[in-house]
Length: 262
Ligand SMILES: Nc1ncnc2c1ncn2[C@@H]1O[C@H](COP(=O)(O)OP(=O)(O)O)[C@@H](O)[C@H]1O
Ligand SMILES: [Mg+2]
Image 1 (spheres, helix red, strand yellow):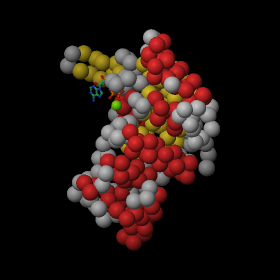
Image 2 (cartoon, rainbow, N blue to C red; image 1 turned 180 degrees about the vertical axis):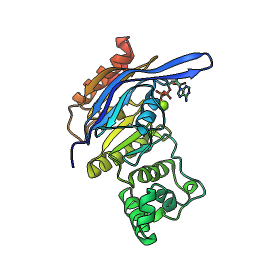
Image 3 (spheres, rainbow, N blue to C red; image 1 turned 45 degrees about the horizontal axis):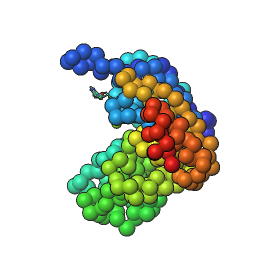
Image 4 (cartoon, helix red, strand yellow; image 1 turned 120 degrees about the vertical axis):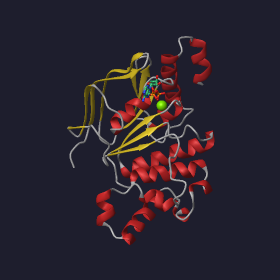
Protein backbone atom coordinates (compact mmCIF):
# COMPACT_ATOMS: atom_id res chain seq x y z
CA UNK A 1 0.00 0.00 0.00
CA UNK A 2 1.42 3.36 -1.03
CA UNK A 3 1.47 6.48 1.09
CA UNK A 4 -1.92 8.09 0.76
CA UNK A 5 -1.85 11.78 1.41
CA UNK A 6 -4.65 14.25 1.60
CA UNK A 7 -3.51 17.38 -0.16
CA UNK A 8 -5.44 20.62 -0.03
CA UNK A 9 -3.98 23.52 -1.93
CA UNK A 10 -5.16 27.09 -2.16
CA UNK A 11 -8.76 26.22 -1.42
CA UNK A 12 -11.29 29.04 -1.49
CA UNK A 13 -14.98 28.78 -0.76
CA UNK A 14 -17.62 31.45 -1.12
CA UNK A 15 -21.33 31.10 -0.44
CA UNK A 16 -23.62 33.21 -2.58
CA UNK A 17 -26.11 34.74 -0.20
CA UNK A 18 -29.01 37.09 -0.97
CA UNK A 19 -27.01 39.89 0.64
CA UNK A 20 -24.01 39.10 -1.54
CA UNK A 21 -21.08 36.72 -1.58
CA UNK A 22 -19.72 35.39 1.73
CA UNK A 23 -16.18 34.14 1.57
CA UNK A 24 -15.91 31.37 4.15
CA UNK A 25 -12.54 29.79 3.37
CA UNK A 26 -9.52 31.62 2.04
CA UNK A 27 -6.38 30.09 0.64
CA UNK A 28 -6.45 26.94 2.75
CA UNK A 29 -3.45 24.73 2.11
CA UNK A 30 -2.95 21.61 4.19
CA UNK A 31 -1.23 18.31 3.65
CA UNK A 32 -2.18 15.37 5.84
CA UNK A 33 -0.09 12.23 5.78
CA UNK A 34 -1.57 8.78 5.81
CA UNK A 35 -2.35 7.66 9.38
CA UNK A 36 -1.81 11.12 10.75
CA UNK A 37 -4.19 12.57 13.36
CA UNK A 38 -4.84 16.24 12.72
CA UNK A 39 -7.00 18.40 14.99
CA UNK A 40 -8.55 21.64 13.78
CA UNK A 41 -9.72 24.33 16.21
CA UNK A 42 -11.33 27.68 15.58
CA UNK A 43 -14.21 29.80 16.79
CA UNK A 44 -17.77 29.05 15.76
CA UNK A 45 -18.49 30.12 12.18
CA UNK A 46 -14.89 30.16 10.96
CA UNK A 47 -15.59 27.52 8.34
CA UNK A 48 -14.49 24.27 10.00
CA UNK A 49 -17.59 22.31 9.04
CA UNK A 50 -17.49 23.71 5.53
CA UNK A 51 -13.89 22.56 5.18
CA UNK A 52 -14.74 19.03 6.35
CA UNK A 53 -17.85 18.90 4.16
CA UNK A 54 -15.74 19.87 1.14
CA UNK A 55 -13.23 17.11 1.94
CA UNK A 56 -16.13 14.68 2.36
CA UNK A 57 -17.38 15.71 -1.09
CA UNK A 58 -20.66 17.02 0.34
CA UNK A 59 -19.95 20.61 -0.61
CA UNK A 60 -18.56 22.15 -3.79
CA UNK A 61 -15.60 24.50 -4.00
CA UNK A 62 -14.79 26.96 -6.71
CA UNK A 63 -11.11 27.42 -6.31
CA UNK A 64 -8.15 25.28 -5.36
CA UNK A 65 -7.43 21.59 -5.42
CA UNK A 66 -8.11 18.70 -3.08
CA UNK A 67 -6.40 15.42 -3.78
CA UNK A 68 -6.67 12.17 -1.92
CA UNK A 69 -3.92 9.83 -2.97
CA UNK A 70 -3.39 11.97 -6.06
CA UNK A 71 -7.04 11.86 -7.14
CA UNK A 72 -9.23 14.96 -7.09
CA UNK A 73 -12.15 14.90 -4.66
CA UNK A 74 -15.46 16.01 -6.10
CA UNK A 75 -18.03 13.67 -4.57
CA UNK A 76 -18.53 11.51 -1.50
CA UNK A 77 -16.76 8.16 -1.55
CA UNK A 78 -16.07 5.18 0.66
CA UNK A 79 -12.43 6.30 0.98
CA UNK A 80 -13.75 8.97 3.38
CA UNK A 81 -16.09 8.57 6.34
CA UNK A 82 -17.72 11.41 8.22
CA UNK A 83 -19.08 11.73 11.72
CA UNK A 84 -21.24 14.64 12.85
CA UNK A 85 -22.11 16.14 16.20
CA UNK A 86 -25.48 14.38 16.23
CA UNK A 87 -25.28 10.66 15.67
CA UNK A 88 -27.64 10.79 12.65
CA UNK A 89 -28.84 7.24 13.17
CA UNK A 90 -32.16 6.10 11.72
CA UNK A 91 -34.51 5.92 14.73
CA UNK A 92 -36.66 3.23 13.12
CA UNK A 93 -33.73 0.85 12.53
CA UNK A 94 -32.05 -1.30 15.19
CA UNK A 95 -28.33 -0.81 15.80
CA UNK A 96 -27.15 -3.61 13.50
CA UNK A 97 -29.28 -2.31 10.62
CA UNK A 98 -28.01 1.22 11.19
CA UNK A 99 -24.43 -0.07 10.98
CA UNK A 100 -25.20 -2.25 7.95
CA UNK A 101 -26.37 0.94 6.24
CA UNK A 102 -22.70 1.93 6.02
CA UNK A 103 -21.86 -1.08 3.85
CA UNK A 104 -21.24 -0.11 0.22
CA UNK A 105 -23.63 -1.19 -2.57
CA UNK A 106 -20.89 -3.39 -3.93
CA UNK A 107 -20.45 -5.27 -0.66
CA UNK A 108 -24.20 -5.38 -0.06
CA UNK A 109 -24.40 -7.46 -3.25
CA UNK A 110 -21.20 -9.45 -2.77
CA UNK A 111 -21.68 -10.54 0.84
CA UNK A 112 -24.30 -13.01 2.05
CA UNK A 113 -26.73 -11.99 4.78
CA UNK A 114 -24.71 -14.04 7.24
CA UNK A 115 -21.40 -12.45 6.21
CA UNK A 116 -22.88 -8.98 6.57
CA UNK A 117 -24.18 -9.81 10.02
CA UNK A 118 -20.77 -11.13 11.03
CA UNK A 119 -19.06 -8.00 9.71
CA UNK A 120 -21.45 -5.77 11.65
CA UNK A 121 -20.94 -7.89 14.77
CA UNK A 122 -17.14 -7.56 14.51
CA UNK A 123 -17.40 -3.80 14.28
CA UNK A 124 -19.85 -3.53 17.15
CA UNK A 125 -17.42 -5.59 19.18
CA UNK A 126 -14.71 -3.04 18.41
CA UNK A 127 -16.66 -0.49 20.44
CA UNK A 128 -18.11 -2.93 22.98
CA UNK A 129 -21.69 -2.76 21.72
CA UNK A 130 -22.22 -6.30 20.41
CA UNK A 131 -24.96 -6.91 22.98
CA UNK A 132 -26.90 -3.94 21.65
CA UNK A 133 -27.24 -5.13 18.05
CA UNK A 134 -31.02 -5.44 18.37
CA UNK A 135 -31.55 -2.24 20.34
CA UNK A 136 -33.07 0.92 18.89
CA UNK A 137 -31.05 4.17 19.01
CA UNK A 138 -33.47 5.69 21.54
CA UNK A 139 -32.57 2.88 23.95
CA UNK A 140 -28.91 3.94 23.94
CA UNK A 141 -27.11 6.76 25.73
CA UNK A 142 -25.67 9.64 23.68
CA UNK A 143 -22.18 8.19 23.88
CA UNK A 144 -23.36 4.77 22.73
CA UNK A 145 -25.26 6.31 19.83
CA UNK A 146 -22.13 8.14 18.78
CA UNK A 147 -20.18 4.86 18.95
CA UNK A 148 -22.70 3.31 16.59
CA UNK A 149 -22.28 6.15 14.12
CA UNK A 150 -18.50 5.79 14.32
CA UNK A 151 -18.84 2.09 13.56
CA UNK A 152 -21.16 2.83 10.65
CA UNK A 153 -18.55 5.20 9.21
CA UNK A 154 -15.75 2.66 9.77
CA UNK A 155 -17.32 -0.44 8.29
CA UNK A 156 -16.02 0.25 4.78
CA UNK A 157 -12.56 0.94 6.24
CA UNK A 158 -12.19 4.50 4.93
CA UNK A 159 -8.67 5.86 4.55
CA UNK A 160 -9.78 9.10 6.14
CA UNK A 161 -12.21 9.64 8.97
CA UNK A 162 -13.61 13.18 9.21
CA UNK A 163 -14.96 14.05 12.64
CA UNK A 164 -16.97 17.26 12.97
CA UNK A 165 -17.24 18.09 16.70
CA UNK A 166 -18.28 14.49 17.27
CA UNK A 167 -18.50 14.75 21.06
CA UNK A 168 -19.87 18.29 21.28
CA UNK A 169 -23.29 17.12 22.47
CA UNK A 170 -21.93 14.75 25.14
CA UNK A 171 -21.32 15.44 28.81
CA UNK A 172 -17.75 16.04 29.96
CA UNK A 173 -17.11 12.55 31.34
CA UNK A 174 -18.56 10.74 28.33
CA UNK A 175 -16.44 13.01 26.15
CA UNK A 176 -13.24 11.88 27.82
CA UNK A 177 -14.36 8.29 27.47
CA UNK A 178 -15.03 8.81 23.76
CA UNK A 179 -11.63 10.45 23.27
CA UNK A 180 -9.99 7.27 24.62
CA UNK A 181 -12.20 5.24 22.34
CA UNK A 182 -11.24 7.19 19.23
CA UNK A 183 -7.57 6.98 20.15
CA UNK A 184 -7.87 3.22 20.56
CA UNK A 185 -9.63 2.86 17.19
CA UNK A 186 -7.02 5.04 15.52
CA UNK A 187 -4.18 2.99 16.99
CA UNK A 188 -5.92 -0.24 16.00
CA UNK A 189 -7.02 0.72 12.48
CA UNK A 190 -4.27 3.19 11.64
CA UNK A 191 -6.33 5.46 9.44
CA UNK A 192 -6.03 9.18 8.84
CA UNK A 193 -8.16 11.25 11.19
CA UNK A 194 -9.21 14.85 10.80
CA UNK A 195 -10.95 16.13 13.91
CA UNK A 196 -12.73 19.45 14.19
CA UNK A 197 -13.33 20.50 17.77
CA UNK A 198 -13.80 23.63 19.85
CA UNK A 199 -12.30 21.78 22.82
CA UNK A 200 -8.62 22.72 22.94
CA UNK A 201 -7.73 19.90 25.34
CA UNK A 202 -9.40 17.38 23.07
CA UNK A 203 -7.41 18.73 20.11
CA UNK A 204 -4.13 18.38 22.02
CA UNK A 205 -5.00 15.04 23.61
CA UNK A 206 -5.68 13.43 20.24
CA UNK A 207 -3.78 15.26 17.51
CA UNK A 208 -0.29 14.85 16.08
CA UNK A 209 -0.72 18.53 15.39
CA UNK A 210 -3.30 21.21 15.97
CA UNK A 211 -4.35 23.54 13.17
CA UNK A 212 -5.69 26.87 14.37
CA UNK A 213 -8.14 28.62 12.08
CA UNK A 214 -9.03 32.29 12.12
CA UNK A 215 -12.44 33.63 11.13
CA UNK A 216 -14.00 35.76 8.39
CA UNK A 217 -12.78 34.46 6.10
CA UNK A 218 -11.46 31.22 7.52
CA UNK A 219 -7.75 30.84 7.06
CA UNK A 220 -5.12 28.68 8.67
CA UNK A 221 -3.57 30.93 11.22
CA UNK A 222 -1.08 28.65 12.87
CA UNK A 223 -0.11 25.08 13.27
CA UNK A 224 1.27 23.56 16.46
CA UNK A 225 2.95 20.16 16.61
CA UNK A 226 1.99 18.07 19.62
CA UNK A 227 5.31 16.47 20.40
CA UNK A 228 4.10 14.50 23.42
CA UNK A 229 4.04 10.71 23.78
CA UNK A 230 0.62 9.02 23.97
CA UNK A 231 -1.36 8.49 26.08
CA UNK A 232 -1.07 12.13 27.02
CA UNK A 233 -1.35 13.56 30.46
CA UNK A 234 -3.55 16.65 30.47
CA UNK A 235 -1.77 18.09 33.48
CA UNK A 236 1.79 17.51 32.28
CA UNK A 237 4.12 20.43 31.69
CA UNK A 238 4.25 19.81 27.94
CA UNK A 239 0.46 19.67 27.67
CA UNK A 240 0.07 22.95 29.57
CA UNK A 241 2.71 24.60 27.40
CA UNK A 242 0.83 23.67 24.22
CA UNK A 243 -2.54 24.67 25.72
CA UNK A 244 -1.05 28.07 26.52
CA UNK A 245 0.28 28.67 23.05
CA UNK A 246 -3.07 27.75 21.48
CA UNK A 247 -4.99 29.99 23.90
CA UNK A 248 -2.63 32.81 23.02
CA UNK A 249 -3.97 32.66 19.47
CA UNK A 250 -7.49 33.28 20.73
CA UNK A 251 -7.00 35.73 23.58
CA UNK A 252 -4.75 38.73 23.46
CA UNK A 253 -5.24 39.31 27.17
CA UNK A 254 -2.43 37.36 28.82
CA UNK A 255 -4.30 37.07 32.15
CA UNK A 256 -7.07 35.09 30.41
CA UNK A 257 -4.45 32.74 29.01
CA UNK A 258 -2.89 32.25 32.44
CA UNK A 259 -6.33 31.60 33.99
CA UNK A 260 -7.26 28.88 31.56
CA UNK A 261 -3.90 27.34 30.91
CA UNK A 262 -3.28 25.60 34.24
N1 LIG B 1 -24.83 26.14 2.97
C1 LIG B 1 -24.52 27.35 3.39
N2 LIG B 1 -25.01 28.44 2.79
C2 LIG B 1 -24.69 29.69 3.19
N3 LIG B 1 -23.83 29.95 4.20
C3 LIG B 1 -23.31 28.91 4.85
C4 LIG B 1 -23.60 27.55 4.49
N4 LIG B 1 -22.92 26.73 5.29
C5 LIG B 1 -22.22 27.52 6.12
N5 LIG B 1 -22.45 28.84 5.87
C6 LIG B 1 -21.82 29.98 6.55
O1 LIG B 1 -20.41 29.80 6.48
C7 LIG B 1 -19.78 30.20 7.68
C8 LIG B 1 -18.97 29.04 8.23
O2 LIG B 1 -19.83 28.02 8.64
P1 LIG B 1 -19.31 26.63 9.21
O3 LIG B 1 -18.41 26.01 8.22
O4 LIG B 1 -20.50 25.86 9.63
O5 LIG B 1 -18.45 27.12 10.48
P2 LIG B 1 -17.96 26.31 11.78
O6 LIG B 1 -18.17 24.87 11.53
O7 LIG B 1 -16.53 26.70 11.95
O8 LIG B 1 -18.79 26.81 12.92
C9 LIG B 1 -20.88 30.67 8.61
O9 LIG B 1 -20.96 32.07 8.51
C10 LIG B 1 -22.14 30.02 8.03
O10 LIG B 1 -23.26 30.79 8.29
MG1 LIG C 1 -19.28 23.45 12.55
